[in-house]
Image (cartoon, rainbow, N blue to C red; front, top):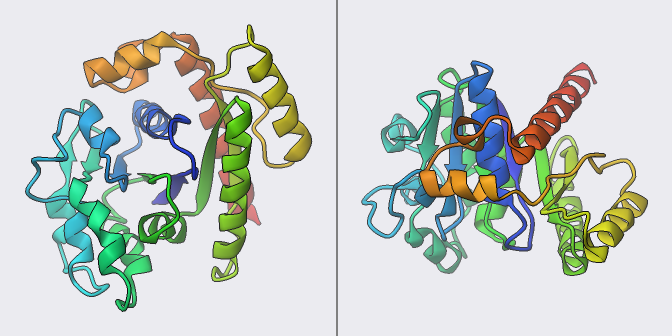
Length: 262
């Protein structure tokens, strides 16, 4: 299994859409994918028609055992999605209480890594949708992953959020055996606006090695796919957004290959 995290310390940048679009395209290529919703808002869980306010069991259950994960529990929590090759580890609003509970509890930062270890043979990829806050949930996502995708909306305020995320990553890398490779993905790009064009230039100048050279455009078909509860490629395989995500997936797979060889 390969584990990718999608994270940024700013909300509204396209993390959930990116996670689901990549999962759908991997499934289309015949891969088995588990998507992990670690955001207490539960956007990914809601996307696939499950109510994070009403679920009896969710990712929250994984954190209730003092840093250990009972055998079989992750598999019991899986829910179906619109794609038979994509399974969901759902969120619930209870995840928001973890920050208050975590002080004094050791081992909570590796709960998701331990959970995915139990699913290692069942899936080819895991994609983790992270909350936009630095805390125990984001730490879990980064600790479990082998590759990080940082969606960045192409507007000026988003650049500040990216700086915070890169600083967080530097801090996390100090406790990892190997630095976590990451790709910056410009999202919600609109070439008709000065803000989008200017921000894209700033990102390319500031992070020439880490930025993906493409971008995800503003595309109402992505919103329509969300309303339908389908992955973007299921809903409209030829939309501008899906074409862009295909190019992004090709880039990430090439990066993965380089990392494996290294």
